[in-house]
Length: 292
Figure 1 (tube, rainbow, N blue to C red):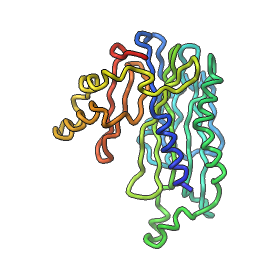
Figure 2 (figure 1 turned 120 degrees about the horizontal axis):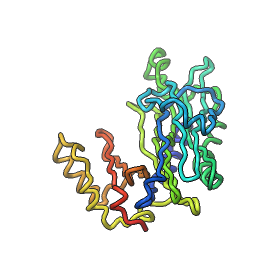
Figure 3 (figure 1 turned 120 degrees about the vertical axis):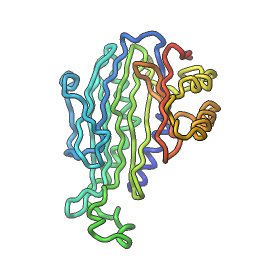
Figure 4 (figure 1 turned 135 degrees about the vertical axis):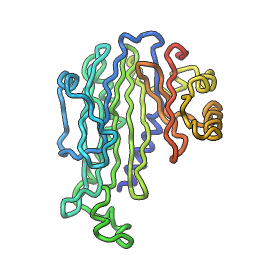
């Protein structure tokens, strides 16, 4: 069951993890409502906050560092260019008869109000929230997730295992008159040495509520040159050979961005260059982007 949801989420990331569009000059209208809400133990009821209260609430928690199962705050909401947003969360759990959680599906997502909000909410609903229906249908009392482990682990180890999970957190929103971008992180664990997390990002054109691919957004002809110029100086500095190889692979488009999103400074590209090394982020300034 967990594996089916994992497959759905991975496919979803591939569909929506490419998008960004940027206004080359409009910085005054740019705004980011950001924060991170890592895996959390919350009631199954939706956590709904008023947009204005969310904007004035406490600072977003450092929940990205929280372990699965720990409580964390929802990100602050925000507003820009006639649009407001807050964040909500849904979670469905499967438990043993003892009540211990063995699997959950959690989703943190933006809810929009204001100009063009209906179409944006429809996008979120049709591309993300529909996955909650299967999660809800599968939630309940069950411990079959642990069947494969029972022969090789003692009961004490089983009792202290992390719950299996599928998690998606869209926790950052950026907007101006032309575009809305939201981004965050998704992850899963269905056994093994550690959970796996990856970046997700989407840029929506406000005029038609369409998600844009990278080549639909910018002229990628200059991307190799831009990647070389803005490759972080400290990235993999302790391994010059890996650094040089990574630059060549990305500049040669052998490695494409895992995800990308807009922010105040420009277009941020996220690369997954290997499980054993930190992910790479490259920021391309708006002044250097040629929009299609």
